[in-house]
Length: 218
Image (cartoon, rainbow, N blue to C red; front, top):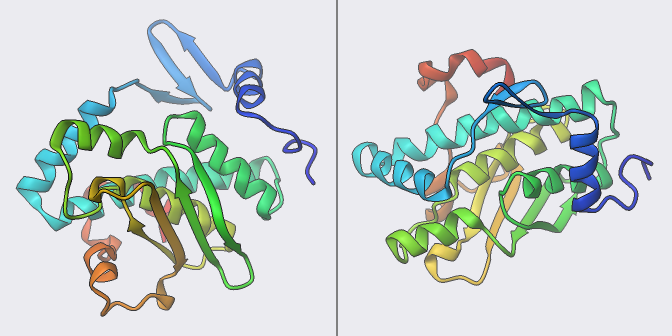
């Protein structure tokens, strides 16, 4: 096991990130790994998502999906490229802990199959869906487009750039006890399945507004 990962707890991870100046507060600006950031309440994101969904419908899911995918790919490229971590279960667990660190819930693998490139992640706590239910009530459709994009992006890098697609098969906004996101190669999904069809992302080339991240998206 990589010594940078062994016995890594969230507290130790947080201390290490701050200790290495990966998170810097200066002159009213927050930078995480050199990138400017800003804290927002989860309610703000829920309102924004809801407005976009009502005005633009299905396209909203893809916009959130691809923006999150670019962000996750950037993080994964840093992990496996710049920092040289091995592409294995231990590193993937570490990547999940990074998501937990920034408030994306409490994810754990319930399936990790590198050979077949098939991964299933369970979120026992999901702040976005929790706030969505508090603010908007139960929904008929899953709402974790951002989480799905992030899962797809990080696993795409893990799987040596094969195009991966993540589908949410269980969501707390539908009254389920947990959120479950399944990730596998795009070619392995049954696109005739109703659930898959409702979430399968459209071609990235349709989104010229985020073409600057094209090198980060497959």
